[in-house]
Length: 568
Image (cartoon, rainbow, N blue to C red):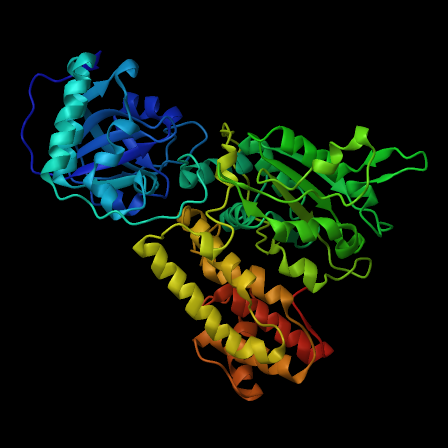
């Protein structure tokens, strides 16, 4: 049932919990090598020979064995698991390896660990991949593993011992939490790395931060606009992500003659029969399959005016309300009087397992976006283009995501369960920075209001669950708050008025140095460094690199054409 060495030498090292994808555990076990890609890399270099590792399979949510570190961490890029890069490694030897029927489910210990007291739940510990354990937790897990290894029937007595150990330490302070959403534990950090590997294996080059921002944006607000030059993969991104995560996606080409919602939602013909539209059919399918995520992709969505053909959907997206069992829903989309036989279509609503993604090209053949559309969407531009990049040829087997992985933490800040101390610091930073922005945006007529505030804050919290994915292809970190400003605040700014000019000037100085600029000549001195670098889309020296670079583009356009706009 288990492999248990006859001798065991005492040691004074630390103990660690290591979360391993289930499909990779056999390779780790066979080679005697544990490894990480990026998440957990910093903790890995703290390992020393003699340290203990408790192996936890993150997807299966079970504890499977106890190991001992036998060497110093090292780097090795030779394949360990086919299709997955695991360059950061350490050698281990098994102390106790449980057979599959003896694996310990996380319910048996997760709520009994001292380490969990410092986090919202056990999932937050696992997401770090490699986490140090207090000595009492080491004793708890060792006792449980050895009990399971010796005899499955001793599990009950082991649990009694766990209760005794738990009673010996002070009871944790329980905070009142207003939980509005229930979602199963899901290792987003590991899932994002698998998703990135799958996209590379399919031959598509996306910067990791673009994929991570898309996932966080869809989770925060299920209306996302993808912009960028032709050929950057705007239409393929949502389709590939759906393919990799077990979701359903449908491409819906937009026609220039759409002036109302008849083509998307439907209409009543001259014979009185209801003809459902493409989007309503897809939403009904999502409503009938609540355990699967659906995505409608409006290709070239600004060939017609979105505020006209999406009017009902744009209104309903602000009508979302949480459900007691988790997720959210809206009132029905249709506002038509239908015959009894068609009443099923009259009950179709926008549900939490559906997202709408639109791709746009900005040229003389397309329409601009109204404030109604921009304010209700996240705008993500695919700007990072590396023509020298070659996708990996190896294939990564995708893993379906549970539909709850796409549910937001909350719809509004007021509905957010009690955040951890780390999350509270993140929220304080968001709110303080938005307050600063409003000093210049409000006089210009573009204030950040409550809806935008909540969406920026929730996006940052969602991004914090997969921090290693917010990086460029060269490994440089991308600040989710900087990205949120770029996606939610800047697309709303357009015009040529003197107040807008003053706001852009102040914002640009603030985004670069942290202090606003008041005169054009001061701003010119800053811009000289950016133009000398070749007009990059990320201003490396700036406090907010992506926001600063886009504001610089907008300022130059204001100077040359007399009109500022986010859209190139």
